Length: 350
Image 1 (cartoon, rainbow, N blue to C red):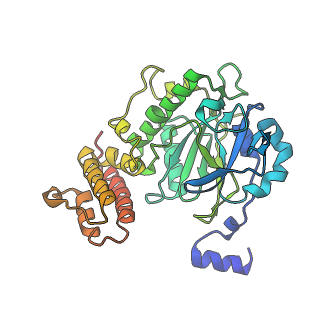
Image 2: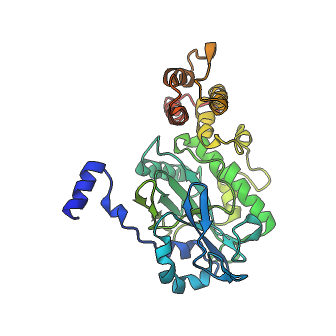
Image 3: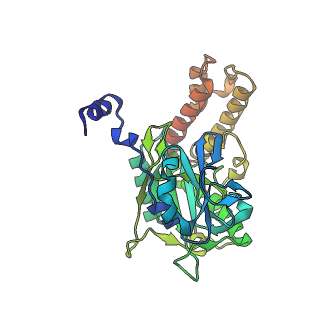
């Protein structure tokens, strides 16, 4: 490490090697094991993400931003520069190159959880919590845990029941089961047993994209790192869709619906209120919902009146929302703190 890099690390508490992105191929190939499926690459930040139209298979006269999995090893050196910063790829494979919609899936490669725990715990703490849940049998063993920037992702590779070397084909009934596993299995288990991981309960769809290993997350100033968890053969753990349902103690027709989680899935504030709902109880969550509605209606402090009582969320909101500046940020930050604190203090209500 150079003297400049040492100075950066001492002042900013950031690993300077994170400023040297190096997109990697291995994880892409391990996730996209169906050679005839297409991987679509996306680039951008926030809501401004678009297919990388300078790469991929030509489709109706335009470059699609998609690469067939079997062509990726030969093509990767030529597209690597496009994947240096804020680069994403489809988790599941498409049957044609001009799309990344659920209706156009060919393979279901992996289930996932997007964990927004930055306000609650470090990546190392979150990884340990995920492994604890797997050891307890609450979730299947993960294939990868990913430091995506400020938060983490967990992945569970899927394999075909009759051909373990290949991923699950995206038949309509399997896509439906996939989404139910995401919502009623994985996310329910995490919210129930480890709400401090703060899973995004809106991230359930099979067409989701995630960051390329080794690429730079420009907002967090970190490169994306995948940590594999291997089976006895030295490969990342993989599981069938059918086996996944069994891990959650249910058959395909009996996956448990978490308490009021359906009410949160389409809620703009769902990924913040989900942990609060299960950790702090319905009363706390309803108060947070009403506060959020007031914030959205006008940049004024919420009038909680006599509802404050002993409710820690109400007390925090009253104390910290006196100024209109940055109220939404304060609300989000404090709700995370309340959710984790109440869970850790043993006041979990399910």
